[in-house]
Length: 400
Image 1: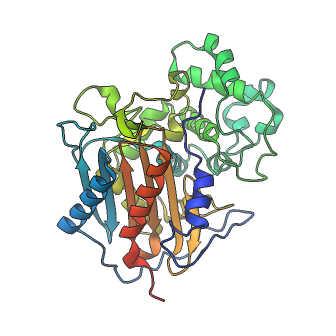
Image 2: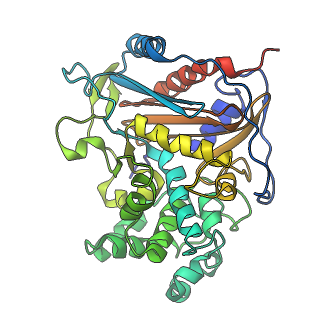
């Protein structure tokens, strides 16, 4: 089995910290701490609104970028001073006749992680779970079934990639799990989790940050127990419905025709490509990377985080929004976090399952966020899309 989740932390360092937002920023620095910072800090001080591209000028620029790079479809959403603007250009399938629509879903990969953390934040505020709730509290029967080192791992440690768990499920574990699978989604996730937790940690839990999709799968399992429903239904109830957005899990093309189709580059040309993630594994990992949204709807999610960081949201408390964007070893809860000169803290993430690519930037001090996605993926796509997104943010950069 190949692994179909991006190496986010490596790219965060290579693309953003080392090169400062793909070379756009003149200077930046990333601070890390050994413990979670207090979440009682004042609301973010928002500076004078920046003049960013909008309307037809933005659409023209996005279409120019897409056409030059021959991408099938590109969608860009900018949140600026509480306004969400989305531009989408191109076709659902390369050389196809169906133009992509603003309502079309894109597979957002690991941008799912911040949404998963947000859903758990809702359960925290409903007092169904705590950020420091442990695996032992949720699954007491596992004491005799899994390694003892995992029993005191908390929800927050799972969401910060500090659990000791490896990045992915290995082939051997999946082969062992197959005879145990019954078709019961929740039970099968737990069976696979028990097998995974029988392997020794890769490092002592809570000693460092090591990116792990398995950790998010475990956090999703804990949410299922306290929430009394599947992860997917909890996301609908706690994220999609309250924010009035339409989301699903899997891939856009799963639901049939008249939808986006993912692409890979074959012999220099884009080719429509079926989902590459192993279906034996996909059901387990939705909480880490399975979310599909239109980028217009994803902009609403980003806007709520901006509002929350400024103490202007009724969706979650400001303290919980701040916790999600507070870094330990440059990672929050579903967000990479860095400090950029002139901009303050910037939250950022990317995601791919190798037929789509998406990334975001959230800049609370400017009350601005941006997200970009394409129904295509190869390694060169990453730098091109991220570089273009950063170029749209140039007016935010203080003049030296």
